[in-house]
Image 1 (cartoon, rainbow, N blue to C red):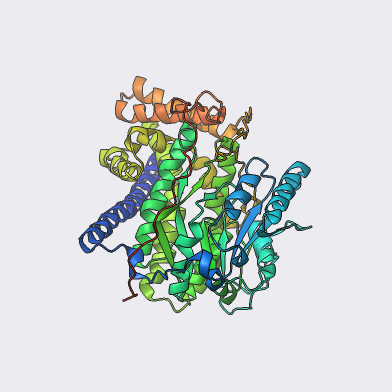
Image 2: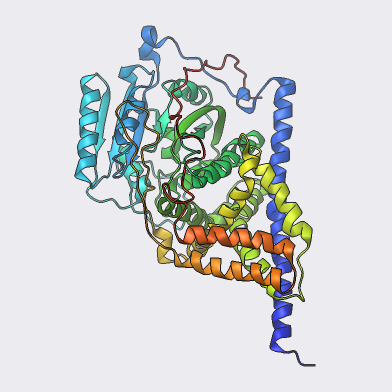
Length: 552
């Protein structure tokens, strides 16, 4: 019996749709599991009156004005590169910490090549030196190794057998270099240039490290200064609020692995040294370091109620580069460390959780579903009436997942459709990054600093930078033509209105992305609020936690 080419195509498409639906179900169940676990942990906290962090000792520090010498010595590292709009505000926030001056060391790791930015950094460092703060700026002649290299360049770690790699020596980068010069500092806080910690940040985080010697790092929750700046920043807020409020908090509450976000956290220097220091073999050196600390037996704390302001990228070009790095890096790390994680001393269920759930589902499969299923197989099914996709897989399940994600942002449901369409449209960038990471292509090592426009700077006399970009994106334009063609074909030829409405909206978002109409200042880049309100002023210093409990 012979089959025509069309019959083989139909059979192949039907098989691919079945696989994609199964993959979509797995990804969706993982998301729903997180939300259910979140509700369980919140209920337990309300009933017992104890949050997950309350099971750890919070070592109350003495009055800094009377017993400042008893405080541990802490360092703050500020890696930056040509970030003229935010560099001075970052230095101000670090130096304004309510920590005894003699016990605080601020290290600015400035890799800037722009003379204007270097001058701004030098001026601000000199200003704070004259005000009695111990602060220095360090620059490298070689920017190899990304942000991790700058820190590592100033830090000589103890060689550790816990490498999770083939033993090859990585290129040193900024963070790696910085730690070499931290001397007797016991704890290291790290902030990207656009992050603005509250003055009591160290007071709220370091006591957990002091009171619990098994804790390697403390991560705080991100909050955002400019989610109303455009539809692009609003979509980012929905995604990151779910990640921080639900995903990371649930992992902490259940004892699972959660990664250090690269900023707005404090590390124990001894932990960094014991696991071999920063490693720039991938573009997610922060995830690499936290993964090695977890496998090495260290634990971490996520503080939901301690937040740090930062700026979302309002430039579509900058957002694309950021998402490429955030997507490609974890896949690189998965490929490089899977064998060594499996051979580690972690319990079997923890190995499966990291390798299958954390990397396999959340960092790999999710991106195939977004672009491969919803933006390729669904349009193809419209042209092929012989195959069908269950309505529950196309509508019901995605609606549940989307609303669950949006629930972690106030009034997030209003922008839930926008969020889905934007996430799918970013599938071209993310799926390309996944493939680059798996095959270790040239683009896998691409590191472009995410441009920030200074909207997080609330100091008087400062004006955010406004950029407009006329760049066109051929991939998004091609996907727009394909998806819109499927939408019109579904309406006028096969009368598939259910699919066609979604495809039309998705095709228009691809079109907007292709013409870069979502940039700040573009057609879809206008503010979502009235534009009259300025960024939130710094809130009053919050009270320290009053309860202290011992680890059971």
